Image 1 (cartoon, rainbow, N blue to C red):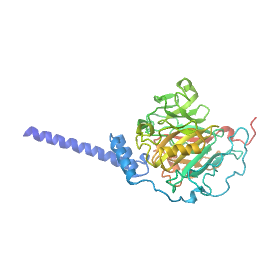
Image 2 (cartoon, rainbow, N blue to C red):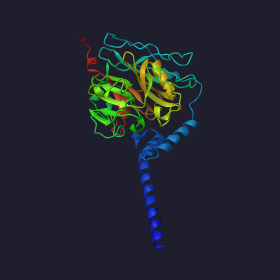
Image 3 (cartoon, rainbow, N blue to C red):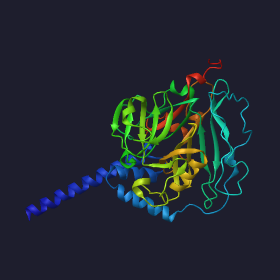
Length: 389
């Protein structure tokens, strides 16, 4: 009897300790902005960090079954913006890419202004826009939603991968949140990267260090030493033999666009290929990055997107290769910034690509932001109005 009581007391103490630990860590998670904007995202991130990722994935799937994307309807036209679509001063020298042509929508008839590109954010010293945005609907079924698309000129912009203590983990890193005052003086855009590395099915390389081994066949966002960001397949478009030429490599799943077309099998619920957190069949917030034939970057994000819809939108924007970045509304965030060249900016100078994006531009300027992201800033050559030659 004596030993039974001791065993029961010991079990009670252990049980109390376990529940106290999980209770304390859950409360901490609910008050941690780096785990998401919504309480559901924070609970999900807490769950994945405490060994119940499978349950979290199941719960997310059940939630999306009970809350499917709306069918039919029309979106608000306020997202399209107003004013001229042609910059007042466009210097289309041979050094810059031509202004993108109107993007077609999967829905006909197109709404007025749908697919029309507008320059946004900081421009070069000569007045050349470096970024254009437009909006189309995701597919012929979910017609009440907008998908935001940003087109970026790499001849005017240079990229930087910022790494975090949560994604990819480790560190310290030279480039990590918050964006410094000096780095913000020529900042034009900032946007989310990919999945947690445990779910990304790929590797991570930056600052000359192999943080996580790179995987052959994985979709890869590669920043060259000259600041050019591009997208391709590791082992084919980029190889370990040329690693010295790369400033960073961030892998996430497999390519969803290749040779200018969506890859086969996107309509299959293949959780491993398209992201085991939600698979590819749910119409949810997604983001993606692609590169056009002439090297322009295109970023896509919006609600009610299946993986097939995301690939189709990238192709409509001109991408010849493309990859999925992050998913879910708490993580898909693209901001563009305005302000005088050479002057620092902050989140207050930022505008989200879509009005419905939950995360604010301020996250990239916060020291609590622990996930990786990209910035695009004007190149030194774009900061002078003098002719180069």
